[in-house]
Image 1 (cartoon, rainbow, N blue to C red):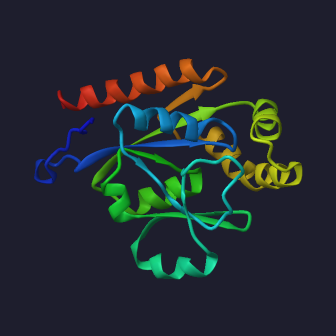
Image 2: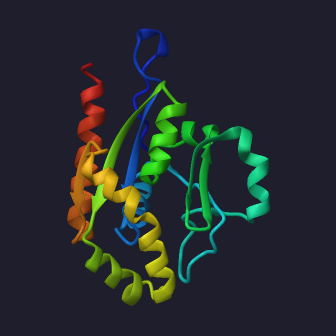
Length: 195
């Protein structure tokens, strides 16, 4: 089990560090997070109103749209992509090291939480490759894929244009991308020891 260094708030530092993994659909975010989980990192499972995909593992907590209202007071990150809602609660964030989140969610999160250090890591994969993964590996419905890609295009175009991230990793090869991701996390955490 890996324990992240937690700084004392009264030292002017942050309570803890959370790594935000961000990437467009089919960029490999969940696969990378699963690998981190196997290495002892605590990965936040956000709530979503979208249906579970075929062969999808437990990447989210799937709820009905009418259940969202009961979490409204505890939400610290919220976004809507197409017709589906995604969010997390403050307690989930405090209990986690890794959080898969989109640019809108990052913006919302950073506006709400000031005592946690966030390191944003963008998983970059060209659209053509992501479509291949969605259609031929995950076997997603082509119409659903197109709607999803279109729904997230604007926010990711702005995110990339404004470099709204600390690091960017190209994920053509999952194992190589994971080695780079793990190196970034370990280096960032090691740096905290000397601040």
